[in-house]
Image (tube, rainbow, N blue to C red):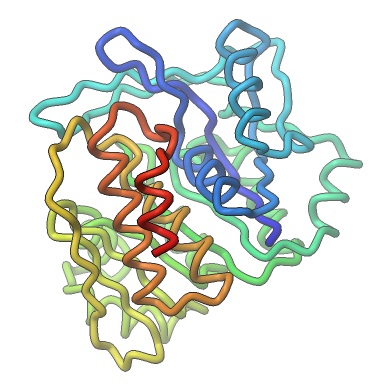
Length: 297
């Protein structure tokens, strides 16, 4: 499986310690860990954190063909404040990933490649140049599925960005706090998940909605389930922080589902990995033998 994740590579600064992150990077890591040929379309600064990120990406076997080096912008940093396990974010502007600038040859190669999956969110679309780049990829690229993780952060989103990306979206990821906001932005009023999926799957190429609900697990809505939610429970674990929990769910689910697992089986594996992630600091803790064995079983 060949995948391309568009957007931010950054470091989450939690209690003064830097953890590799960014939703697209987190998902790319989990896709790679489960066997995907995982690429990123992003940018890093020519600085210490950029070097650190490059080493982590190489260790995680993320392909760097479309990761660009910016001499003018620093590698992204996000100040994360965790209260009772729940993070809030202060995202610095003017980071390298705000200015993703592939050359013409790289862009042609990217567009001509046959991707099984392309991932995007809203945050990396906060700059006009990135929006134009993503639009080029979505309009001209060759891909089987587009996974759109809305991933609301601060004020870096709009109804226009969301609606335009939905035009290409086959799999949509929201959490239970984003759903009422997104449904109001797109349809003018807050909607329950079932109503939203029914309407959005008529208006867009959407076939699957992943709705994560924190400690209440997740709900999956697919065109084959005729509007009924498939509930995926979460385990009872001690939560250190929830940074990257949704990304771990997404990456694991996509890896398993696109390789042939049923919705329920892929969802349960994704839930196990998300439980593991929230019981550790940072978004991509190394999976230990116990969790790997549990996934095999």
